[in-house]
Image (tube, rainbow over all chains, first blue to last red; front, side, top):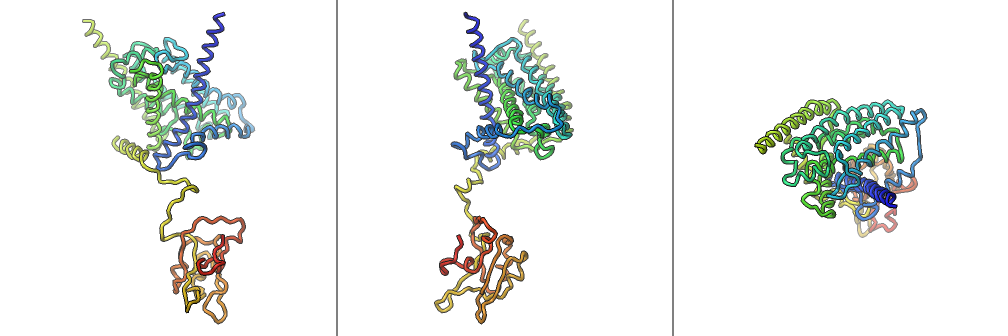
Length: 327
Length: 140
């Protein structure tokens, strides 16, 4: 009698997480258009609801209604499955993110490790999209994008290891609990910088958005997708943005601390995450983009050594402090 | 690095300031008094009778780079019989206003005019007049 109740409760939590994902994607798209507009001395969307809040919804409905065009000589399986594969890891990761002390859909002991492992799966979907589109520009865009994402995943993960060393656990809830005295952005400022920069590159965000720069390679791997398949890539980008900023909040900014109350904790967590998202959009509106070879240099020659040095120094300091305490 | 921070500061200042664009057509921006709109013929009084300052000399038509002005003189009178401006060709360069020796043309501030046929865009003498003197003046 009890087992199906447990199953139903787990299913309900997952459904809430998925619903939250989609609503967040819509909110973020609207926020991007408004913030970017204001920073360029113009208004964002203004029609369609008070201050244009329904604009994203109408855009999504419009994309749903478009004709289902599949070009003639595409490779059917990679082309059709790429939009699905880019979206599924984001949804899966959402089930692991803790919003407050007890508000997490599932909590496993190595959740940070699991999050990074799943995030790597979305890289293959870009290669599938690029290859399956039967278009040399899409292929080029897809390969560039995959190279960029792979080379920036390494500094991303290594910069999080400094936090793991200091917290002593890979469980995301434990990492937040360990920041009760001081948020990890203070001792791990270098790691925070490396994390946020690698995150921008992971998400194909300006200034690293060469794979999908509209004026240069005409939408990159996206070029043969229309209608809801394009919407899928587009939404996945914004969901990934939220996930990375939420991860950065958990790892470096203390998650929901100092509130342990579920409601206030969640609200404060969301507040911090949205501040980081605002900073990302601020950077997006300000800087021009790197050239491909410039940002490969930046990733391999600057961020990777920095993150390795950070791990070394963090490990040494933690060891020394523990030995001193042991004495 | 400092340049990057300066750029961020500029964008943030722009975020908190008033936007430059307005929601056209619900709000419209103010046009400067030295307007850049349609050309109009000036009207003056000659012994209590309103007349055009234009004497149909044809200098504006000869100098127009797009050849959009057609002028024909009335017989035995120094007034234009036919004066047409084809606005589908006009580039609003003001050469006609600058070269007129009688100061007979001026530029208004109208920029919103939409037509459904090509004939709409050929304004003739009555349309070009100032409407407060000639009643059938303005084309709607």
